[in-house]
Amino acid sequence: MKSKSKGENFVEKIPVKSSEIQWSADDDGLVTLHVENKGIANRIAQKLIKKPKISHIHLDEMGSFIWLLIDGEKSVFDIGKPVEEHFGEKALPLYERLSMFIRSLETNGFVSCKNADSSSEN
View 1 (cartoon, rainbow, N blue to C red):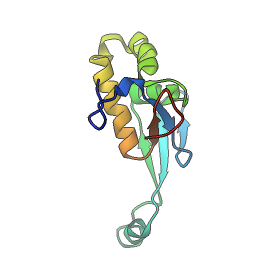
View 2: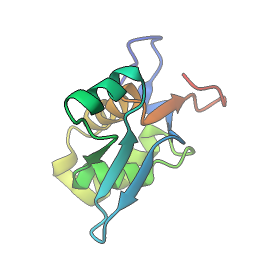
View 3: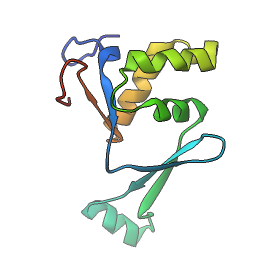
């Protein structure tokens, strides 16, 4: 799957978890991301509409499985192999779904993606 920004192959990217994101996994392996709501707008919302200081984002079974595979060394392609083995047809279309999920994590600042051939992040 080609990245729209630079014509690079997204499955070659290596996702890296943000050091600012705290997370936990329950006994069933389901992951919850604990995201601190920072910034002036969030502080105002916390006071006015009782927005929580920390949001808890619960990942589903597949999202949790993928999150636990993200280690800063495996590419999107490498992560796809155990996902396909574990979930089979439920994961199809595999790399389209996996790329969309990791891009969503990246958009929300939960991960960044670096090139496999360099240590610079994009």
